Image 1 (cartoon, rainbow, N blue to C red):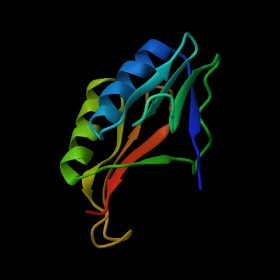
Image 2: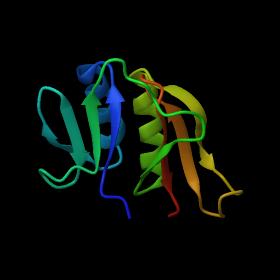
Image 3: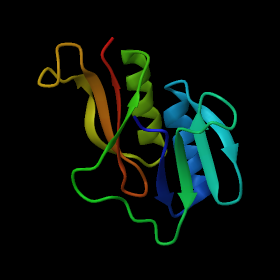
Image 4: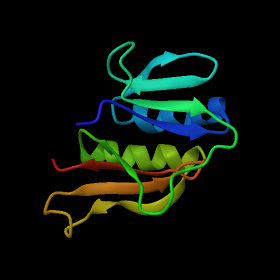
Length: 123
């Protein structure tokens, strides 16, 4: 359904470092960049998630969050640890979420700009 999504960020370099680590742990990488944006995905030039330099950078309101697909529970754990090490705030430690399904394993964070993000696997 979705082709891509973009987040506004106040500091492109710092946010790039944050998402390089967090998304790198899930198997995603930078697929393009310029002076005002960094795109992430798996194929060069085909971003699925993009950081856009904006001032001020305003995160969406309550109720919005973005869940990234993770290949394994270990990857969810790494996502959480990497993001915390680079300025993310814990919003739900890695673990099973039985209310969402018997194999729903996720971690929740708030990035340095206030965006709510999640990594999830059902494997």
